[in-house]
Every structure is written in C-alpha cells, then in structure tokens.
Length: 321
Image (tube, rainbow, N blue to C red):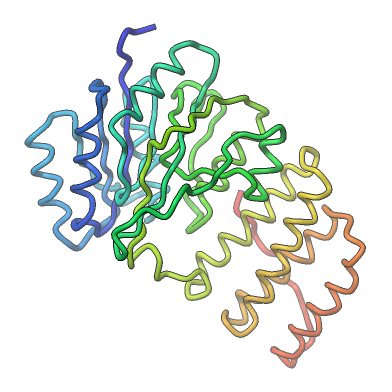
C-alpha cells in the first residue's frame, strides 16, 4: 500500500457559482493533502467557468471539465465521466453545495488502509443557510444488523458525500450511477452496493455539512414528472431485483410507497405519468404478499377511472435497467 494514496474527489456542478467556491475551499482545507478534485460542469449558464478557472490556476490539484455532448445531461453522467478521468486509489463523491470537514479524508484513508473494509461512511450534519444554523444529523444511525433492509426503509441513511470508497471495489462490482435517473440516484447507488452483502466501517464524527438553500429545497418532485417517475422506478426496481434478499416487511414498505406515489400523481401529474405509476404499482403486486392488495388495487382503479373517465388499458412500458 502507498503511504499516502491519491484520493479522487468528484463533483458534478450546475449553476452553483455562488456556492461552489466554499465547497472547494473546504477541499483545500483537508489535512490529508494527496487528492485530486475533479469538477464536471453540466452546462452552467452562470459564472461557474470563471469561479473554477480561478481555483484551477490557484492549485493544480483541481481539474475542471465539461460534460461531453455525447453524454446525457445530469449529475449522474457528470459523476461517471469524472470517475473515468480519476486516477485515485480512493473516491469521494461530493456535491457542489456541501462542505467537507477538514479531517474527513485523513480519517477515511487511515481506516481503509488497514485493509478490512472497502468503504467508510462518516456522519453528516444539516445546515440551513437561510436560518444560519445547524439542524442536527441527517440520520442518527449509519450501522445496522440488516443494512440493506434498513437503508431501503430509511432506518439508516447517508447521502453521496459521506462514504469514501476504494476505487477498485467499485470497478470490480461495476457500480456506476444510473444516468437515466433524475432523482433517488444515491438511494439506488447505495442499495446496489449494500445488496452485495459488503460490511463497511462507520465514523460517528461529522465529516460532511449538507447545506440547505432555496435551490435544493424548492424543487418538489410533484412539479417535475421526470423526478417523480425516477422515484417510482427506483422503488419498483429495488422490489424486483432484490426480492430474494429483502424481508417481507421491506417488500410491503416498498409497495406502500409505490401506492402512495400513485395517490400523489392524481391531481399533480399528467395522464401519462399517472398511467406509468399505476403500471408499476400493478406489476409490483407479484413481488409482495400484502393482504390489502385487492383493496388497494380496487381503489387505484377507482381513482384512475375517476380521473380519466376512460377504461384502463396498460401498454407494456420500458423499464430503466
């Protein structure tokens, strides 16, 4: 093992010129200094280019790239592209509006260099920019006897920036971000990893400050049908792909969430989105044994019939895989 292995910090960005400077300053403040920070822009129209140019000129450890035109728009494609460019032995995904506490990389590398784990997760604290105050931990628990089931149900939880990964582990298991998703990408990403049954190291020490601000709080999923369907599809695929690994309680939880998404779609989504959501609810029935299925299905049909005033006809739908 190298004495000071390289860490690749990968940050997608879009129109965050007002915040990303503080994010990059938090990277500069790391006590562990052997890192590269790869920022991939998703087509910003503000002064992000100017902000990044200054950091690249200041410190050669910063790289600034633009998402290639042949890659789909979105943070996930930017992350995957940054991963392809990275040269580090370790990878830390990060968001362009969060802050990395100065000890994070040092503590993570120190633990992973012991060779016992392939990733380590630190605690994250919420911070409101509007209220100028901390709001407590993102989730109290990071560890569980049943991490896959408990992560799916949000009994334990962490976001993109909290883990430090061994890159070779991600490559070996072909763990990349799903570029077709508009939301729930970190939920999907971490579930796929936990489904491998891999044990992991945790730290109770806060390593990430998640900053709440107007732009990341105002975009309700019901106002964006792409994000809405991404949430639906991820839940369905978890139920389908990991049905043999998850508990009956988790299966019912996922079915209930899918049903709730359908109820949300009534009155807030276009007919096409409602029909697609309905289709996923129906198809999920074969993966869960719920004594209330028939009643739930009847109410879904009634709701849909009331809204459309038409007979229900479901065409085959292509699922994201």
